[in-house]
Length: 375
Image 1 (cartoon, rainbow, N blue to C red):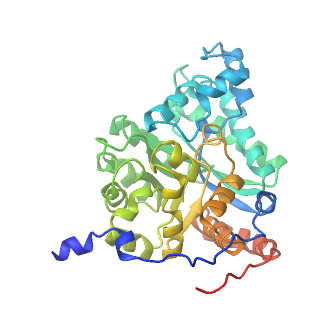
Image 2 (cartoon, rainbow, N blue to C red):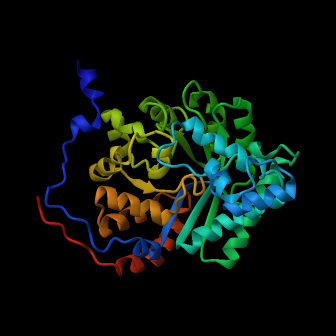
Image 3 (tube, rainbow, N blue to C red):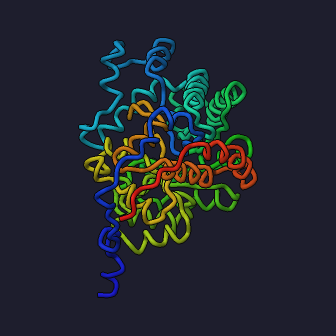
């Protein structure tokens, strides 16, 4: 009976209804959010290309596409809220990966992604991808990492943005491959790579099978994050934390189903990389209004809002913040708190975090604070 009480969902343990006389903060507009300095900590390279670049690279490398008409191709790549499953969402990556098999394509995609982020005032961007998925034309893993880092560094020289790379292992690919990728992350530590991740299908592919890879990155003082609790239950999150040493959790949508684990995550200030639009598209939540982001924020969890896949979810960092603000009535003060949490949760060094926050906190402070009526 005691254990049953411990495993209550957070909804059962917390009753924090917003007052009926709440009203939207008039300061929260998409344009205002675009002007704010911000982060994007969960962004996949192969899910964040420009549509025209997919077409252009397909022509140059003779990759076969479902259509060469931009409008028709968009139907295969850009998801709507009626996307039926995670599997349907993932199929779109077969298309983008088919054109990301050359050094030139990888460098261009990374450069354009960082430029697009900088143009909406993302000041720090972490780009994640799995080099092993870009070897179909016999590129070496080091060449793949070099190409992406060179593209990001080119954008840094031209734009006001700082970037980092997160190398991803894949759950449904053998653990030996994850170990090889972990070795790659170790080799590129302090040379552009800031973290290690485990992505892919959660069900039937437990994170513990990749524990050796995570032990290697932890032994080398490299940060790690895992996709967990997106399409599987909170036990996937527990495994990511307790078996793989996760410093952050990608998505964590199902954390609310285990109140005891939710409190552990909160007490240890383990950030959640929340991606509202893609969570709807992948059916991690059935509808936007069902998303637990407001519950997490009100309870005090350290949440960050991110794009996941700019192309597939047809979104930007600004749009993700604005969408959450509109649906869940976040004030400008709430949005600023979430942005600050993004800088704090980054895989930057402590001194770099302090430097960026000292630079951008005065800018965030220029925006008015809206006081809601008390309940």
